[in-house]
Length: 48
Image (cartoon, rainbow, N blue to C red):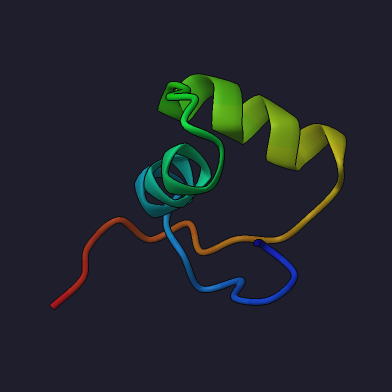
């Protein structure tokens, strides 16, 4: 998911992960997973 669209916020990654797997994870868990995999994601939480 991150490689396909790296402008997603962590909250959005959590939502997409839940849609795909049926498993809800916290933003903290997603952050740790993304960091461990050394992937880049959008860090700014202010979207207009």
